[in-house]
Length: 414
Image 1: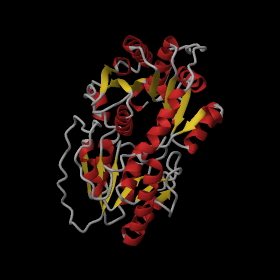
Image 2 (image 1 turned 60 degrees about the vertical axis):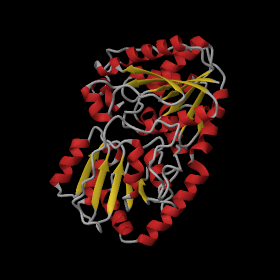
Image 3 (image 1 turned 90 degrees about the vertical axis):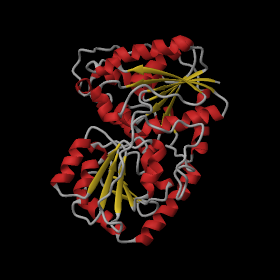
Image 4 (image 1 turned 180 degrees about the vertical axis):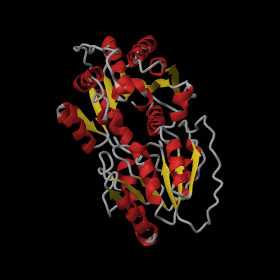
């Protein structure tokens, strides 16, 4: 099958969806599909500071086309980028199916191209699509409704996230196919080698910063890995750690990287901020942790939580959409209400002092990964959706680029 995968952010962007896409592309190639990826990237200083950036690197077995997100960079003109994505897909056709990662802008662009080609378009609805895209302005609400109403198939990571999208948009539940997040269970395994595994593209172009710890070896490490963003609880973790005898490693970059560093200094938290760590070095980052903390406010499905679960690291996470579907409190991890810094402090304190509980939670989490979230299991579910019907009978929504929208002011947050 000739598959066109349309991505909004891909390596060297620092994003869980880059990791997800990298592994999915490898599975598609291994299954014998002819794969083309069309990926946007940020090429400006502001965008690369938040996500990393630059053109996507070669991917073994995949034809890769990088498109700088010139519209997004020029004041949030997403409509311009939709047109460029659509035209690029049409130029590179023929395809048998288009799979778009994110409902907007890539999903809408993929659907428009699929309509002209007469092929199905599968859209993976990701976190921001359901949490806030469409609540910002009428233009983006119309765009999301078009995707939700007319895509050949809608893939979504969890039941709780699906229910949030249904509550916001009224989309019928039967429109969604729940396909959970996935993890490379061989790469992220207790004691596994950190050597890259072919054919997946695993290295970021952004160099890692060395961890030069000044902490005593016996000090427990609490790891945060991913986008450094207050919406993911990064600042809450710093506040919680201020009350505990722990070190914090906050690995990654993001919109609140500097805010987190400043807060750690203000509260005298023992913390390291190694910045962007290349994917082939990430397993070692997990291996040094006693506890993984992701006190997020909402997810579509968290790839970093799955990586920690696979790696045998006990997880403390926000009891939030897209998390509570895979973490059951006291069974394979611990949950705290989003924003509850006092509760987060108490649970971290309990886990750090209880190695038996940490080991029990980690064992169960690893077993759940092998049964439900390993890539070969999830990839089969995704590829089954590629038999979706084509849907030529819909019209593109009206767009008004002059309409006030908070994402035009800060487009990297969309």
